[in-house]
Length: 74
Image (cartoon, rainbow, N blue to C red; front, side, top):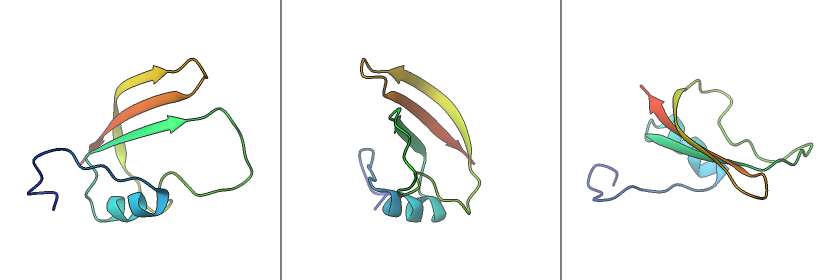
């Protein structure tokens, strides 16, 4: 599916993204960080995989949410 796609593919959700990371299908990563601390929840990144990232862009919204755009370095 990835090799035949004419446009970028989007993967949403922590569990599906984790599977895609494990399969080596991720080229870029967009993270939206909300400045709220909670004591649990799903991880944004798989814990057993180490991936090098290059920061491509960053942005901050008026509500203090931060957008980080990374490229996966292979």
